Image (cartoon, rainbow, N blue to C red):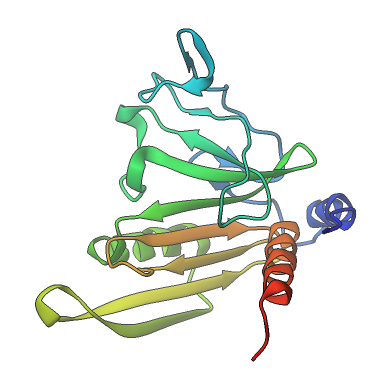
Length: 195
């Protein structure tokens, strides 16, 4: 059983850094409580959310299969979805009542140049950009970009594409989320049989 007792203490340290304020991502400010309302639920089904929402809103937190902390899905209204966000939703980690990290999916290699330009506009030059080759449709070689920014109280990671070329990721995470993800990865690794 994992122990999460250190996370609230670590979260308090994030606000105490000299690096300045934590960033916002599409209007969702890190380091404070969620500033959007809860999404509308379906009539007669209080635990099911409507597919289309009239305004940007959040779902109650759930633990997703590949995450170790509960996440709040944040849905954008159709006319408010940022161009780089796939599926009109992002995910927020909330620890001790404060947004501690945000992740979202992009459309992969088709938009990776645009996403990287926008990330550089917001966070400055990346600490490093990696170009790797992947095999695309019809055997065509495709360049995939990855970049990382290490700021005082948070880290930004950009993956131009993952397992599929039409999926990329952007993660803006504070140290408590990074620590929880590492602890989760370590716990999963410990369960695997060794050779």
